Image (cartoon, rainbow, N blue to C red; front, side):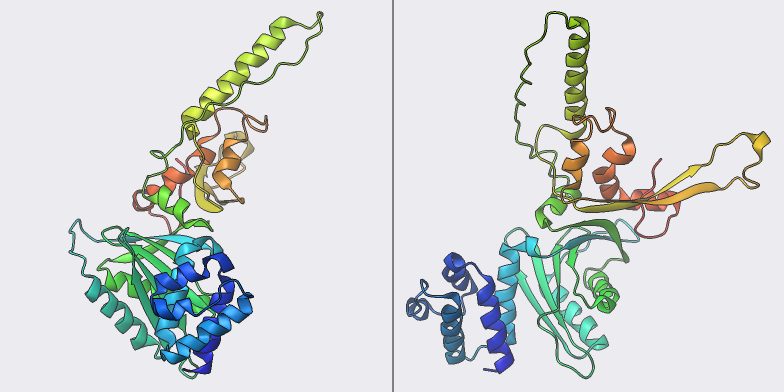
Length: 345
């Protein structure tokens, strides 16, 4: 077994929590159950990794097997990476039968025709998701197994989830290969990014509005009121809080929001001014790029009105983010915008 393969397997094992190493190796399936029984999984992780490497040497492991182990790790821990959503588009309404074997061949052929030194590994999962791991090299160097790109593609859907390598220059080549292999016309980034792959899927597949876990907020505890306090003002405040809770519930639902960390869209509106002031010689729209970022963007927006930081209901500019993500191509085609932009009506 090559030394670089042995070192890569060792580092991958070290990333896995010790209590889960055995389970993950069983899912890998490269080592037999009898071989796994020879490993003491209660010893230090470094010693466990050495034992795993030794067994892999006995089985003559290569980089393909090592790449599969890395895919399994990233499938179980997708939040270790940052994911972006891309949407592919067809020229017509025709639907093609998805052939996984043909899809794999086209991806490999397209990438290797442009870049000789590249490692492409696939793994299918039961939710119709194809996980693709790409390790990039150059015409003069071997693929760098530590700077990989990941793609999660759900067949029969136009959505692709990409966790790009730090080697950003290879992203256009990857997108081109995906379009050709899946028989689409073009691909555009939806400007939604998050560590939570499942939350991004919930948004684009419209699942989150159906999966809310209903909960009932605890009533606010009233403080002791002095006799001279104006009870009318207290009742008005109570009614306002109830109104805010009701409006917030109508907009965001009763349950937790998908975990979104980044979103952006393009705002285009007309500048209004007094004609006598002659501020603008030409009637041109006012344009700006609106960006939002937060560790939990949608939950942050949801908490603005109850916290008294914004009026209820919130502006559509804030509440429309998931909907605009799903309607991305309709908006882009209608307004004739550049790729990756959203427009506020």
